[in-house]
Image (tube, rainbow, N blue to C red; front, side):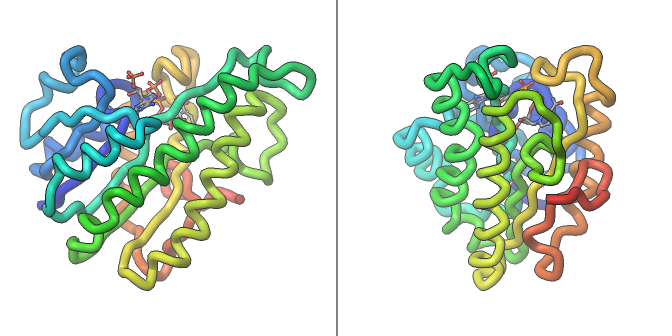
Amino acid sequence: MSTVLITGANRGIGLELVKIYAAAGDKVLACCRNPGAATALAAIKGDVRMLTLDVTDAAAVAQLAQDVGNQAIDLLINNAGVLGPDYGDQTTYKMDFDSWEETFRVNTMGPVRVLQALLPNLKASADPKVVTITSQMGALSLDMVLGLAYSATKAALNKFMKLAALDLVKDGVNLCVIHPGWVQTDMGGTGADITPHDSAAGIVATIKKLNASNTGSFWKWNGEVHGW
Ligand SMILES: NC(=O)c1ccc[n+]([C@@H]2O[C@H](COP(=O)([O-])OP(=O)(O)OC[C@H]3O[C@@H](n4cnc5c(N)ncnc54)[C@H](OP(=O)(O)O)[C@@H]3O)[C@@H](O)[C@H]2O)c1
């Protein structure tokens, strides 16, 4: 059985990932900003430990590392994310810069903070993996003129993780970024293509194929390769 740490675990795709790993008998470290209000997460049966984490807060990330202690982490899933400013306020012509900055803190720097803090725990695993939930909107190959601030945060995230994969393969840590599809969550909206369960199930299956020969990959939730 594996130990899996998931950020943004209280709703959406993160919550579904917790359900799947917990049902499989894995030990899940489920991180969210406000565990006291995470009723859906608290109701999940299995070996699930809730931990408090705002990924933008350096002190909270350091506290997380302390709370986790020296236990090995086999899989880190950087899932927490925000869409940023209203779409009308993140265009070529108009930008809410404060909100864009905050979006960078959550979507781009958050995963890096968590990865760096938990690297000793990952290195203690026999087969450590770091999976970051990105978006197709961060692909330079996709000309979708929407959510320019959000897209830029995910593009920067992709670049960091691609380079980090080259570094960390030497330590036996394999990384990938995964586009989860257009998913029926608070972020994706009710009109989206797929359910959170179908997205999470696809992500879990895709993670199984991550190894040293394909580290640094950009995949879709259904296992297909995504163009950078
Ligand atoms: N839904 C889609 O169609 C879609 C498409 C492409 C990519 N994605 C990506 O998939 C991931 C999950 O999205 P989702 O659709 O499940 O979104 P969601 O339902 O809006 O959930 C977002 C999660 O991130 C957490 N979060 C936000 N800011 C945080 C912070 N500063 N620290 C810690 N946690 C924070 C939220 O916690 P709170 O409840 O405390 O706010 C929540 O648990 C995101 O990275 C998103 O960019 C989603």
